[in-house]
Image 1: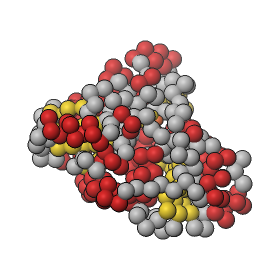
Image 2: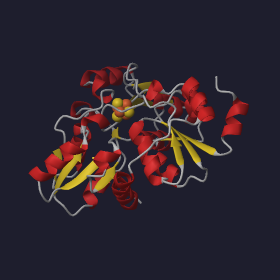
Image 3: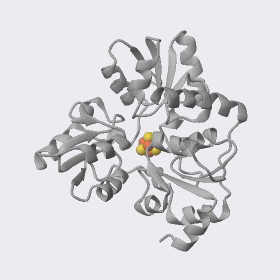
Image 4: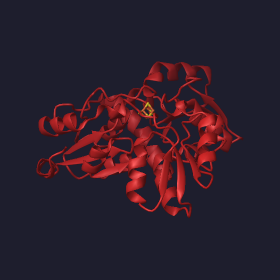
Length: 301
Ligand code: SF4
C-alpha cells in the first residue's frame, strides 16, 4: 500500500507520470496515466522540478529530453524495454548508408541514442499520420516490424523498410489468430480493439487498430457494451475504472510486460523519498533526439 500522506507531501515538488501498463496501485498514485504520446505531452507541460516516471527506460528518456532543466527519476533502472534494445544506433547508421535519401522514422520505443539518428519520432497512435506527412516515399521504420506493417498497409504509396527486419514486442506477439477467434465466439457482441504491435494475422481480425489511449477513447465513444482488448493487460484496469457500465475481456490473460511490472509500490516509494535514480542523457545526443521528438509533436498537433 502506498501511504497517502507521504504521497501528498512528495507531490509538492514532484509530478508522477505512469504508463497505462502499470499496476493499479501505481496508476492510482499517479497524477496522470496515459500512453507514450500523452506522457510526452504531459512531461513537456510539467511545472514541478521533479518528474517521477513510472514506465520503461525509453519513456523516461523522452521526458528528460523534453525537460532538460528538470530532474527525471525512475523507480528502478531495471524497467527496460527489450524492443528498444533491438535497435542500437549503429544499425540505423548502417541502414542509412544502404538506403540514402530515405527518411528515418523511429517508434518512440527506442533509446535516445537511436532517436538521435532519426528524422522524426512516432508513437503507435500517430505512426500513420507522421509517415503520411513526410515528402519522402522511402521510409526506414523501426524497431517494431508489426507497426511497420500497419503503416505500410495504410500507406500503400510509401515504401516502408523495417529496421531491423524482425523487431517485435514480446508481449504483443503472444497474441494469435486463434485467441481472437476463441474470444469472439465467447463474446460475439464484443468490439475487437487491437494494438498495432500485434502480428498481422491478429491485426486483420480487429474492428479497430488502436494505441492504448485510442482504446480508452474508443471504449468511451462506442455504443458497444463489451470489448475484447488486444494489448498488455494493465490497460484493463483503466478501462474498467473509466467505463463502469461496460465489460472488457483481455485477449490473453498472460499478456503481461514483466519489464513494466518491475515498478512496485516499494521501489516507487523508495525513489520518491531518496530521489537517486536520475535519468541522465548525453547533451548532444539529447539535443538531436529532441529535435526528432519535437518534429513529431509538431506534425501530430
Ligand atoms: S509492452 Fe512491449 S514494447 Fe512495451 S515496454 Fe513491454 S516489451 Fe517494451
